Image 1 (cartoon, rainbow, N blue to C red):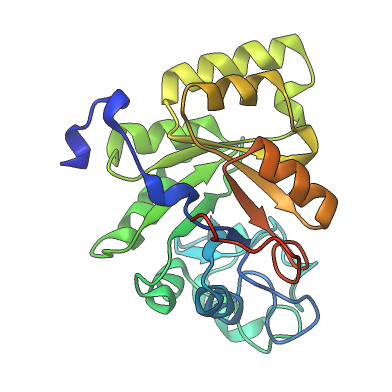
Image 2: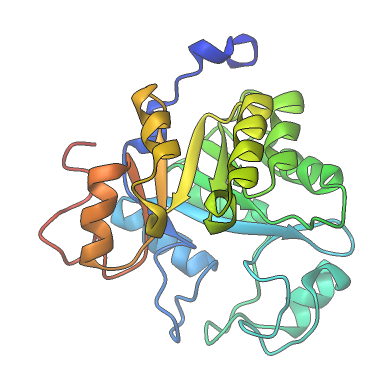
Length: 260
């Protein structure tokens, strides 16, 4: 049973088996907007794994939406966390999609085990993430497909280590983690504590000594967000799987999954 694996035994080959569509395979300004069921469907049908972002509503429903605030991607305003799920569904549409933001269970139903799903959990540093994590766990109940969680927040990764160890977990690292020696030391301590199964690093930081060392240990390194041919070249040299947006991966001579 995966729950009883030692940390050394944890192997999830599917994490790096294919390229991962960032927020689904979206096209901004069309009906296939980011983090919509249409973008998820497009990724699945094209043969890619799917990455989405989730956060909680005021009534603790887990919705698929990247930003803390509604303003950029909907006809609404204010923090997602201040609205109830029914209000969000009834009143606001995502971009020009004509569709409301989906819940995490909506996305799981759409994927229906056909491709791996990477769920980036968006937490607030000001709040304990326990209720948010429990909501994600609840959404996963009964789902038999391949799912992984990932977060910038080590507390989230640590929660899944403690309470849902069967799911692979990833720590997302951006510029702030590698800016100073103090942050680098903190990163090493968090990695020791929450024992992520993979790291997802900003492609603009590659290569770096932390990620090179991580890969030398045989551990998977994902990189985000790969958007063009130059980034793709760097990512393929220094990482094991790409979290990408068009036109990277698609429409280039390098196809995803040739070796996957």
